[in-house]
Image (cartoon, rainbow, N blue to C red):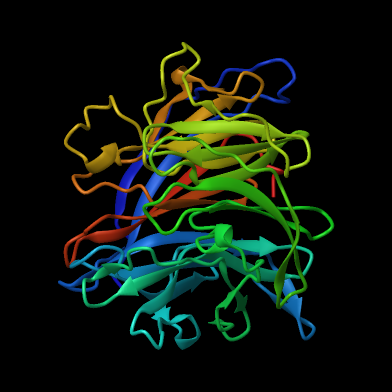
Length: 403
């Protein structure tokens, strides 16, 4: 593995707008970007990188240090969505050194009798406190190796796997059981942030409906139960739809104070909505800045950066001298959100990951310590020997008590 390359190490100005009822003022102290992993060869590069922390714990009477785990996937340069199985790397010194990445046979592709390939994709790891397990949720793709892209009209399922911190291996990936109904032919929790309740129930946002990847989808949140091995559905939330191209996809969920917040990707814009119970949401509204102008994020996911004293959004957008970037997928920005007005505070916007010609777009967020949150991303089409994995370390001026 190549040594760490510090890409950016800049102390940023303290920008935050205190608003009555938000709690204490919270500010970003610094953002440092590191690139611990290069593209491995001329035919593949790393994408769909996300991570989380396994807290310090006791195993068989022995104290174990906290472990940071990052999952990612090799993707072939030729074709579309030609993903290999999941790989992972881990660190017990807060990312100073890393072990891996290594592929695990339990997370590999599976060939169907038809010759199509099914592979777990768009996976997001998150520590499940109640079970004491790192639970990774995502989706499956059906790939057609003859045409080197996702199978037209192919289905999708909610995939999941569990990490064994003692052996640094994974359970064989499974699929969440859903009713045998047409609406669930294509159902997935790809690239989504979930929220775990205090009783251990998992609020898992999914998108579903349609006949395949390019059809029109709707979003809802499922309340699930996880016993340490099996993830099962207990209750469905309401359906959120929009009649614009592929509909709503890649929803991400968080909770701030007593309200749940859901951000939604659409081909033409980004949307947001709220809920009191995390299952039943109001009509989504387009994301805008606080001056009323559109955020400019489209056809790319957004994710929450949740501090106990303030709510932030990570996103890409137009209008940043980036018309040369595919879907304007770089730079990646971070800005504070007004949780009452549901707007992004323009004055707080800052660059989270830099402008690169090939862009980002698929990324993950994880709170590592009370003082540090990470944004992790794979770089699209990085060439052999170029940085392919990026970690932006967000340092806070005030401790973060959010999970």
